[in-house]
Length: 118
Image (tube, rainbow, N blue to C red):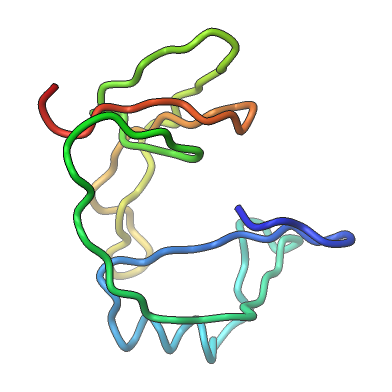
């Protein structure tokens, strides 16, 4: 999440893999962007395509959502929640495709996950 200023809440959104049609939808949307309900209309201010690489195996501190299939080190004072049945993709007609479950920190505190085999 990006720092908010004034009455606005800012997010960084990552889409993988980048496809020209998806990029175009954010740069020049055919319909207003929304973060859920009609009252949560959104806009973009900075779009860029970045090259990414796989993270090395080992422990990693994260803030945000991670797949529930990862091993999480439960730490004192960090409250995690599980968001279940989140669509990873939408098919034609906005029908949900593959779904996954995710952990996220309720208090926005960093927590540790294990990537790959320990």
